[in-house]
Image (cartoon, rainbow, N blue to C red; front, side, top):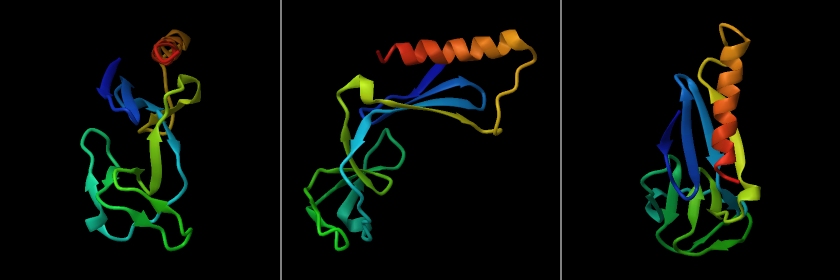
Length: 120
């Protein structure tokens, strides 16, 4: 079990080769479709996270997002402080989890449970 990304917005744990646990630690502020790359700067440490370099008014929703707003993919977000609202996602590169026997699957599930418990 290895933590491969630690960020205020999202943590990623490698449970084993090809199996990840993502912890989403943000709340959404609406949707935003930024068409210009000049309006945002990349935020290191979290893939898909950018920050507005200037105020941005979304022409569709008529909503203004201030400079400094974090954008995760196309969604304005802010860090979630309440751990009860964190979302957990298990990702597999192979589409399924395969174990040689029941004990191996139990160990994988136990490892995932231990990580989740660290966020309580």
